Image (cartoon, rainbow, N blue to C red; front, side, top):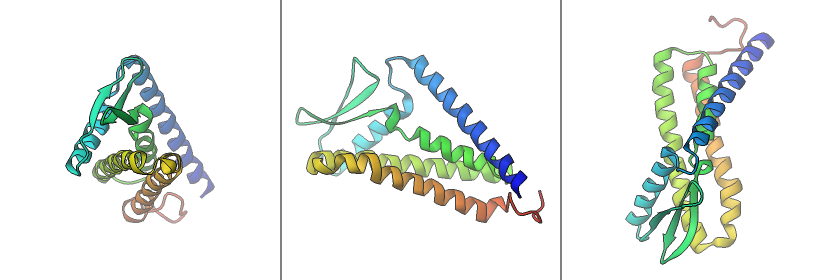
Length: 177
């Protein structure tokens, strides 16, 4: 069991570091441009906010790779590469890829799970705008703690679901490979 745990952890760390390095290189390559995922998160969040009655406009920063959310000429939140959920997606991706399971089931589960994380992140950005607008004193708590815990809990629960439903057991000595 200990050997299997070390193999899993090694795969996870290797995939996690590789994907983060590739993402860092991509962000560095873009320089002052906003990355596409951050832009998509901002645009979808804006559409949701407009649907619920907030006439939000987006402004692309000339100085930094970020998008600012404005309402009545006031900037309430910004979206940059740290806000797009990619780091959480990388954690989820590395977890599932490191655990056993068929390639077909991994592709399907990763697609659904990554989309779920993306949607939760859209909800996060939209809700953070609402909090910044209406309950500014709670913004830091929601931004730094509540939503981080919520999104990582989703990833953890998806991983547990994967292990119990598709992955079998990586660590049980009697389980077949």
